[in-house]
Length: 354
Image 1 (tube, rainbow, N blue to C red):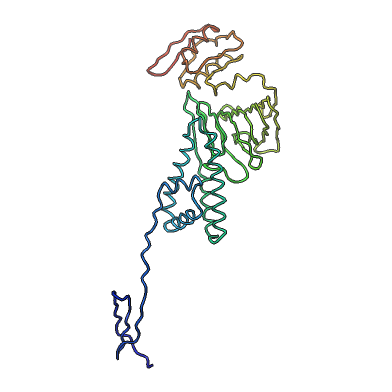
Image 2 (image 1 turned 180 degrees about the vertical axis):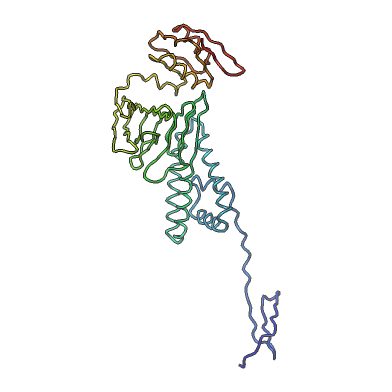
């Protein structure tokens, strides 16, 4: 057949055909089949929430991966927003249901990770790095919690650990623990109840030393402004390590490590009352008057000025005050063991001791 230039194409919608017409007539007649249009499946926030909780199927994970590839910047932002809501839902669980639900969610998350890996190895290997990148991104997102003055805050971490954060203290930690260790940063004072995980030690970073644990109950004070550092161990195992040197101290239960003049000293833990702040109790034991006043400033968020010519002497052995009773109750109890008067300006939240 001689070559012909195509002059035009005629489309027949009734018979789903194309007729190619040349200079001398029809050249070829093609018939085609129209496949039904597939509706694009919507990726809802509810599905993304289940994805963050590790409750989606391997097929759903593939769809979410494809959805993220369509518009990486906008869709990643939306996924991050849903992930933030998921984290808030964990933090806001009631005390009664926390342990069981946390355990279930951790198991679910591991299931999700395994499901992702299996699905990607079957035929979507390119997305493995994609999801790993997203997971690393979440691990790099830092959460900062600061306890308001006069209050303490209880924090539930995503690994099941519990942290009581003392008044005016700050804790910085990742949204998801990944890598070889679970690292948090403490400024101030906190008591930790850490879930056991030998493969992923828990590390509390402070201005002076790192406190490394496998699973235990301990208290850390890290006040850089005053150069004060101590760790009290109630249960389990703890290792205190210097940032810059090889100095390391392995602690036994019922011991306390203190930083004094640049060196660490280990003593028996004789006064556990000092750590009753987690139960709302302020404890004093052989504290001087100015040390007591400093604690009142911290726990009641009040300005206190001492105008006495000399510091009053305090004649007591031990003293416990329930924080919820208020600062004036604390001062009245203190007056039973010391000679002073005070004036409280409620409008300025200021106390003058004289």
